[in-house]
Image (cartoon, rainbow, N blue to C red; front, side, top):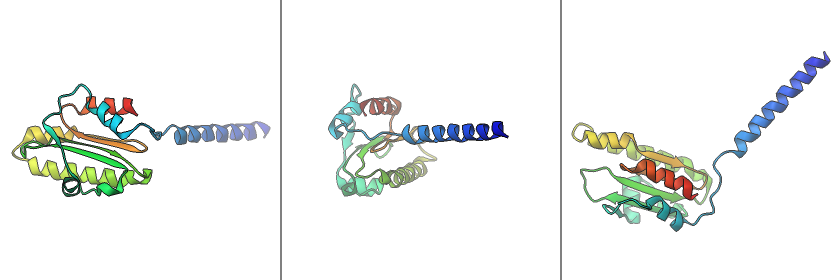
Length: 157
């Protein structure tokens, strides 16, 4: 009887430790300045074909309200035959993550439907898109440099 009680307490204690590790090992809030993160994401890459877009383009293409975020930067290629683009966003509130993710997933689906049938290379690029959402920053990239940009993004935080 005593052994069973000790075993039950041990299991509960172990479960509490596992739960605590999950809670505290999630993405951490970054205190890094937006400009620094953006520079590091772009570091050592030739992204000159991707032009920074204005707030109107952010609303039109991504369905996001730039005013709702702390900071947002959107870069897109000026060629309708290519899907290359990337977004760096700093959230005002971590609760904005889900809305951002839904908007980006919708953008990827729309772009995939647009290029499907006549630009298989662009569809493949969209399938390899990076969407990396952290506590108060997120990165979305459709580009051949997506993995490198994501690695640099994570290092910058």
